[in-house]
Length: 192
Image (cartoon, rainbow, N blue to C red; front, side, top):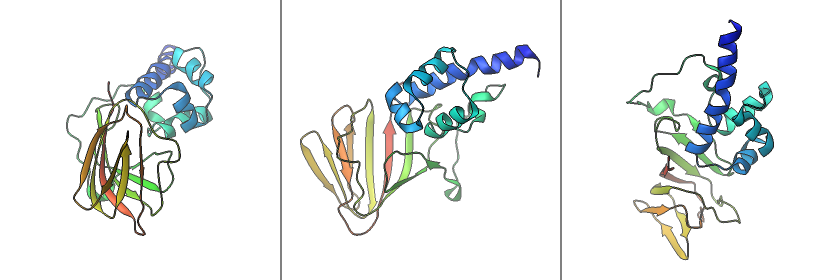
């Protein structure tokens, strides 16, 4: 690869990282928490003031649910306007919460504003002690089990077939109070 092409690839890493962080509605600190890369290093990479090591790039890619190739491909991928996801080919999505597994059923987050997954929440699992708050919306449709979802001062208990749709700029949390896993279609919309 000629030096000019190599420089172009390296210079594209920062803008791609910034765009993905914005699309996911993450602050520098939130991405740092997910990736174990300091906020200062992330900022330097985004500004083009630092070329990330392969370890740093691997951590950032994993935290943003992207292959490393996303950051270093020479050519921009042509956007796909239709994404088909076979039932046996759902990609596991990253979440910082334990006790919940997400299998993606929508197109890539950088290309679409809505991310949808089949969520399986283990008995007793929750979003944690601290309430969540971030830009966007979420819609949860319960397929099996039980989920409790608190939004602001509302405490909701979802049974099979119930759904809840809420703005995520309000404090919210979720938990599975049952003895069996809960399964849901979980949709998140993040602003552009």
